[in-house]
Length: 374
Image (cartoon, rainbow, N blue to C red; front, side, top):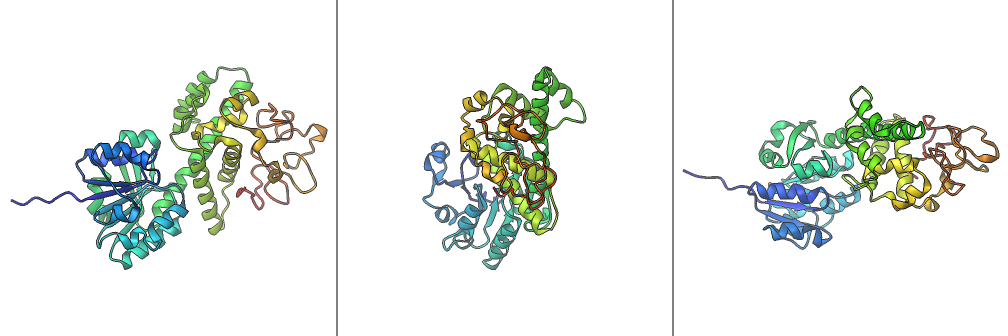
């Protein structure tokens, strides 16, 4: 009787998401080699028995399956396509599985380059956040067919509860961006609802419970709304990475010659949050854009860092929404000077969301020549 040895696995990128995913792979009995730019983030895995490698190429050299969980498309391109990148460094027949949310075109380029080298690259972005990674219940979004993924499915199942197939290289990335676009609308809706409840004098916790049980509910509202209300901004998913995902979706929409006004509005808000110091907070921190200045400052935000010039039409001050606000420079909702809830953020920091997307100076939804690239 013969037995088939389990494939050797390498994991590159052991951060908030990568470390728990790699841990599940180890728990399932796979021999694991790890690499991370900051070595200390891989120390716990090494202590559990993983082998440390000094570079992505060294990690991949003997692996049958190589996973990457990186930050940005530029990181993915460098790790895969540089002179000593994974496409060249991995052994013949190896599987290269990118879990990063990245560019669909880049995923296709990596897939094609790998095939030339007799290797197999597949885009496999994930959704479920840090908790899903910890629990091993992520949803995997594969840019290949179910038959194509069969050789690596046993490893994929060690950290997921659902696997979705989108048939071709790059399609997994497009599907993931659809998820992020939908989530963006939910996050803005959650923050709007909290602000309306708080300023309207009703119990925001009871509002979340009521809305969450009806058609206005979402997993974002029920899962992250209570955290925002409690002032818990610990990241399950970083603001700066969500901004990156929305930028990718908008860039792809431009290539397709379509407009995503909801995603553009959300990008503007999350870009603003990054500018004022919220880039390393969780996505629920969007609610801080509606908060009193003291509460925002207590969370580490500084409205003085905001580049208000990007929100001002030439020769004018204010939010650029197309309305005449007079000397008080009121926000679109007429709440007085300052940001979303009208709470005032150092006087000149107008109209949360920016609301100036081109020469027509239209308010959110106009999006003529959207300035969402900051």
